View 1 (cartoon, rainbow, N blue to C red):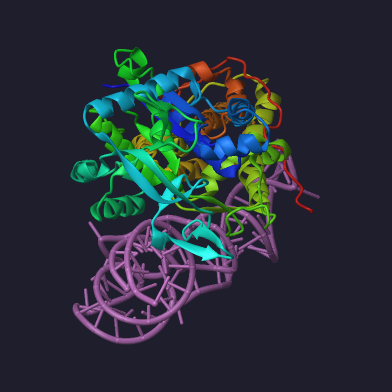
View 2: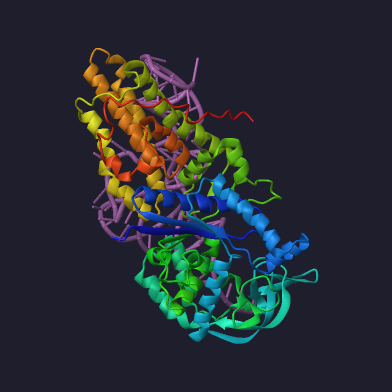
Length: 512
RNA sequence: GGCGGGGUAGCUCAGUUGGUUAGAGCGCGGGACUCAUAAGCCCGAGGUCAGUGGUUCGAUCCCACUUCCCGCUACCA
């Protein structure tokens, strides 16, 4: 059985600093990476920055900087974000790196030598900010300025020699790929969009530019820069040391198990990328998941609306784990999600502080007062004990399936449900009234501690820091936690000491 | 215009391969308890499951039409 798992985020375009959308993609990917790791997989988790293109070149000029200096600065903010979000990524790739240039040029050479790329001429209305050409009827004129209808960005007439990729040739192969792999594109609704787009016919794709210089050169023609998307998508194999296909990283991890992306870049990942790979005779990734957007108050966040929720500010104000928990639990995964500070606060107070945090606290405090912080014997599990403990065993396969199907919400619901059940269990058993029945009291506490352990393990991919704090009660750390241990009802060893921990989540006053 | 997704409790969302009283969390009202971050537990209020018509013994779920929202895509001018 293949126990390797390769997951990627998009590489982010550093024309501006990171926003909530970047944070969301990264947190979601990290969630899956951590779960698979905990499931025993060798996980390779990649993120990075996509730094080429005219937009960056112009932004750099505007700031009086060399493109690379400009990129270094902004790429750093994305690298910092991986720390801020506590991502477990194994690598951070930048398209300005030599390893990536080699990889892109090699891929290009293969495509060219296979006759998949040809030189021709392109003329049309070009939008720098969209990095795309538009047809005459796709533009409109306002106040004497030509704009692309779709994006509203300014276009300029461009006529230049360009290399083309024979995308049209791959139409049927792509449809075959979608057909043979029902879940290649998820969620399903978006899969339909891609399929109908491909069915409607594909045109060859312009894959080089002459009008600017900031990018990877076409190996055989120094006047041309390779199209940013061909360049950018290749990062997924550059990081595995492509073109060295004998390299262990490449051999173990390609094709990728999951490209986690936002729905806005689905076409590039679900059409162009597999077409490039098919043309180069390389394996295609197993799955592309296009998640929804994070909206604020039903609208896309924008400066003018003043509804921006900056991920770094949120982390500074409320902490990382609350943000991670909130995004993973409250956003209906695959759909757009509305987020707000009020909801975030309510989520922190209800689920984290009152429910899970307080569960840990009440059990721990009880154990301290009555058992001197020693794990008690589990003399006999009665029906109530087994009922709740076995919940985890009985749902184990479901949980794994939920993860494999990217069904984040079902996974979260299971956790929440069991947090409630654990509190209810403690309530119903009333250990404070069992002081004359020590065996029963001990078994109740043992069971409660087991419940905290199991829930904490499931919470690890969601809120790694807090989960590890909770698991520290049992002297467990990142290296020795496994998902399957949630099936074990007698994992904890009686008489061992447990550690007191500080309050896990502080409540937040929402008076303002 | 075409294709697709969606409109379920005040809010955020589940769900139903059609079948007795439609679910969760938050919020709201009440109660009993005390181990705990005045947390937790119990009870309750609150929904014509967008509208109309149809199929069916029976539809929130299937079909048709209407309406609103969103996405992809086209075309006219």
